Image 1 (cartoon, rainbow, N blue to C red):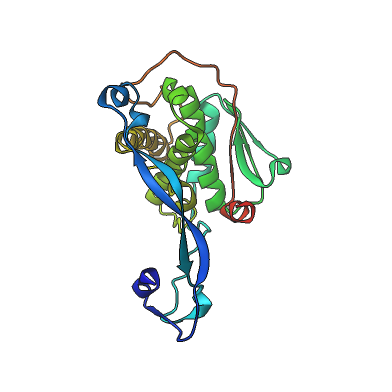
Image 2 (cartoon, rainbow, N blue to C red; image 1 turned 90 degrees about the horizontal axis):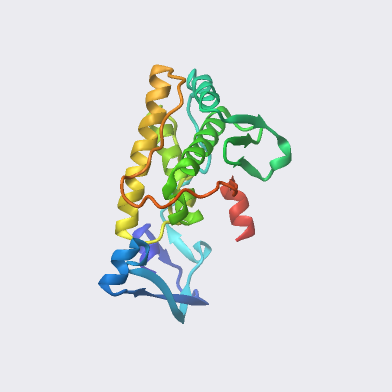
Amino acid sequence: MYAWDQLGRRLIKGEKGIRILAPVIGISRKKDEEANKDIRLQNQAVLVGFRSAYVFDVSQTDGKGLPELSERLTGNVGEYRERLVDFVIAQGITLEFKESIAPALEMCYGDRIVVLPGQSPAEEFSTLVHELAHAFLHRAERRITTTKTVRETEAEAIAFVVGTTIGLHNGRASADYIGLYFRNAALLAESLEVIQKTSAVILSALETHAAEPVAETEPEAHKPPTAKRDDTAERVSPAVLKKTA
């Protein structure tokens, strides 16, 4: 009931909890020499087992109204949309709009981006920044040392930074992806550097209307041999994620 108390709600007298199996999470600690070889091995969260727990639905509580969380992006994109499209094309990236990729909002095949038409201007802008970030991350050599979850999180964080900077209101649109980030301080620090550098490149192009190819944006460390870019990256709407969860 602590979570409901924090939201200003109280359990209605006589209500009984809903029994569930709650996960028990532990921390897997590696020896220093192993962790130093691969920072992804440091203090990983692991599933230990399950325990019996009780939860309460909102209908079983009374009190303050719950805040409404919007999943849609809002705001005025203005001329930034055309500047972004020009910048994408200047990077040698093919840009297409196809309804056949639904329910995905966009897909990235190396240097080809496909976007679902019919999105609002703000959503389309964020979608395109997300996939442009993927295209940059595909070109970086460090990509073969990261997981799909990390790459998706980095791309969504870049879209969040760029969108917020030009005045878009993101609501919960990015939270569903950024919240997937696992607890690894070292890897998070590396990702933050990538997010900052890539966001800065895109924002600089939007402000100056620059349309020139850019170099790789990745940390100096962890540069293994280049791998072939043969995978695709895609994102679906948070609503679809919830339906399939």
